[in-house]
Image 1 (cartoon, rainbow, N blue to C red):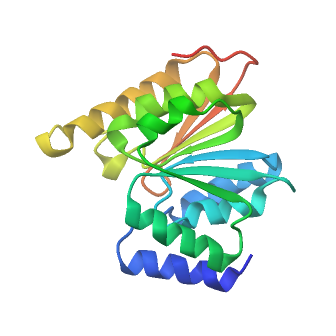
Image 2 (image 1 turned 180 degrees about the horizontal axis):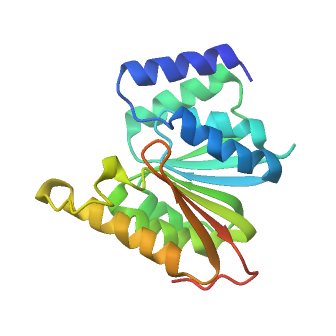
Length: 202
């Protein structure tokens, strides 16, 4: 991996205000991924490919990342970035809406990283639970959404996103097959570990 090119991708994304994974969120995830050495990672929300490229460092030798992005321009940028960084053999980008693409997937994943439309988090969780391996981990970024989720925030503009993020937290906290912690790193990170071999679909 070309670390210098990866750093350039990060700098450009920050300059252009493209949301990418925050350093402290990445550090927390690294602790889990280093120990796991996952073979398959599913990422919902590619943006410009930065997080997926960071995750390749922790993959098992023949590991792979499948990532989904609906914005055409971002897909184009992500493909260019992945090529420059030299990890195109480890990342496969699916272009389109995750709501339509996810139900067509039947493979199993060790890790699922949710970082896309906040209003769709409960749907993404349902799909993640369907495909996660026993002992897998589901990460959900931006789960506290600028602090709105834990406050009494109810303004119309973000109401749907906030309601659905709260729903996600409720579901992962109450599911007996998940062990979940919510960390106040970055914009909030939910980490849900699978406890049992059988995960019922919610």
